[in-house]
Structures are given as C-alpha cells and as structure tokens.
Image (cartoon, rainbow, N blue to C red; front, side, top):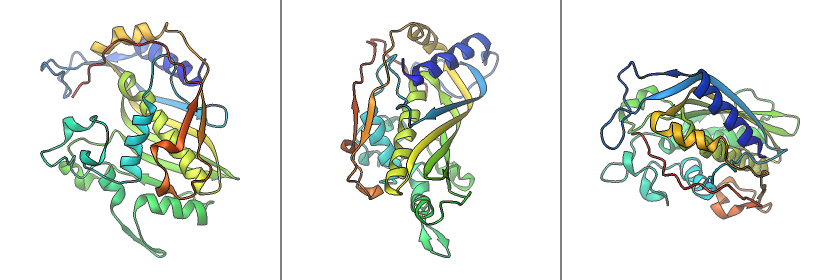
Length: 276
C-alpha cells in the first residue's frame, strides 16, 4: 500500500464522517449545468510525506503524473500564465481569448524583485539561497498577491512554498487555501514532491519531507459516491521514482527527466466532474 493511499483514505473518511456541509449557504462554485456545487469539508488538514521513503502517488486510481509535471514546469520553470505554453487543456476554462489566465500562478513567479545580490524573481531567489544561504529561514515563495487578485482569472489554491535545509536535507511546506480532494489532492502532492526533488538535486541536497497544509479540504457533493468507491479500491505498493542525475540546472528539467517504475494503479472508470 502506498502511504499516499493511506493518507488519502484517512483524510476522506474524516471529511465524510466528521465534515461540515455548506448546503445551507450560497456558494460560488457551480457545475456545468449551473447547479450549485456544494461540499463537505474539514478545516486544517496537515499531511507529511517522507520523500526518502517513497514517492507519494495514489494507487487507488491513476494520477496522470506526467501531465501534472508538465503543469508544474509551466508554472515554476516557464513561469507562464498562458495556456498556449501548456500541453494539457486543464486551464482552458479560465483562459481568455488570448490564452491568458491573468496575473496568476506563473506570472507571479516571473516578477523580478530587487535584492542586494541583484534583481531576481521568486524562483531564482530560492535557487540562489539554497546554494548560498542554506541556513536561511526566509527561503519561500508566495503567489497570493493581493494587489493583483482582481486581475487573476482564478485565485491561487496552492499559493506558498517554504523551503528549509536541515544538514544536507531539503524539506518544504506547501500551503494551500482550498483543496478539491478527489480531483486535485494527489495531483498537487505529486507536483510539489517533484519540485522538492528538483530543487534538492540542483542545490546538492537530499529531498526530505513535504508537509502539505490544507486550510479547506473538501469533497464535492457529486464526488461523494466516487470517493466512497475509491475507499475500498485495491491498493499497490508505491512505485520507484527516479530523476535524471545529469540535470544540474533547474531550467534544464523536462517532463522526461523523471521516471516511475512499477506504477500499477487500480482500474478507475468514473468520470470526475469539475466544479467551476
């Protein structure tokens, strides 16, 4: 059994058994047919994944991890806010006629700021500090920029990463304001686990823990039957994750720099509707 499976099952059972429904409120999200998309939620879920022990990918159903990595590179490496730079169609719902999602996600990481060492964007500042100031307690990114929220087509869900070096081990905290547990939970965990591996490798460090903090962890009403079926799905051991050891430049990684060996997810035939 994958540890990611264990945490997902525990989280979802807790939400379904002890969570709070918002059916007594007007909600912003809706289904494609216009019906309000209500949720049952838990506040303040924290999961810890030891990346030295295993790669945190679900086997309860397939996570399309190569597509998840592609989106990660789109945000963190290309620092793009245009869907034309992304291979998948996952952001098309929020793009305008030019393909832009506004001043969101990659745009925020691309903005340069002035430091004594020179002008750098948030990603390059993290890379600089990991190599030159590993004892710093200020190695972080934040894309929830209040000044630009009105020009974002979607407010950032996963909005902040804090990196911390202990000895030669790189640990990180991912802060997320909102999490669609079925559609996006493992997608984000996989992405930011890969990011920790990337940052560690190019900084001469070893990947350690990824701590995932979720403020509002929820299951949508139309997702409940699917989640309930998943809780009894067959499980497999976590696959082996490897990174091309020849890559030493963060901007040289591609989706093909990563491999999973022995990934055998359970069959999954359900279509997952996405609330918008």
